[in-house]
Amino acid sequence: MIKGFIFDLDGVITDTAELHFQAWKKLADDMGWQFDREVNEKLRGVSRMDSINIIKDHNNAQVDEEKLVALATLKNDIYVDSLDHMTPNDYLPGAQELLNLLRKEGFLVALGSASRNAIKVLKQLEANKYFDVIGDGNSVSKSKPEPDIFLFGAKALDLKPEECIVYEDAESGIDAAKAGGFHSVGIGPAERVGHADVRFDSMKEATLFEVKSHFSELF
Ligand code: B16
Ligand code: MG
Image (tube, rainbow, N blue to C red; front, top):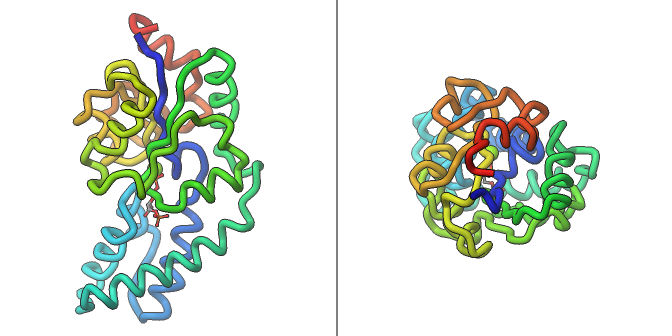
């Protein structure tokens, strides 16, 4: 039986990807590095340090670890500042409606995000009330595609993986959900999340009604 839901943040609850892009772009421009939306797509759901390594390798740049951490911190300062402009109007369409309904129907809900800034994002969205447990980039050391962040969420909710549905927009996020034994809902194109148990183009279509219909034997 499904008793809980675990949500990724960026690309599922809100679209912080654009703000991440702007911040990486500013850093790349300052460094004279090539960076565009195609490269940015590879950063979806990927941790901050893995992201800067992808950008560095894309540019064949030689940067030592200490400098790399300093650059990632610079990018993060730009990103965190840009979050000040985020408001409760910035949920992805359908996300807040779903969270409200889950509360009404008494499901347990956790966040399972790679971001170390998830607390600030939730604060800007005034979304804390929707979550029983917050799992973020500070909660576990192994990032997606390892299942650790979702296992952390399930354990804190006192649920088994098979009692939870994970919502994810990243390929590595669906990999993580499957590796942990969770049911999965993919948000986005088939090339990215076609391996989820069920896939929707956007959160607007991924309603509780649709998900209950798909996993009907589990409700
Ligand atoms: P931060 P998610 C991920 O969020 C983003 O998709 C990814 O682009 C970002 O690099 C990562 O968080 C880390 O974010 O720099 O704020 O710690 O999709 O896992 O909610
Ligand atoms: Mg995501």
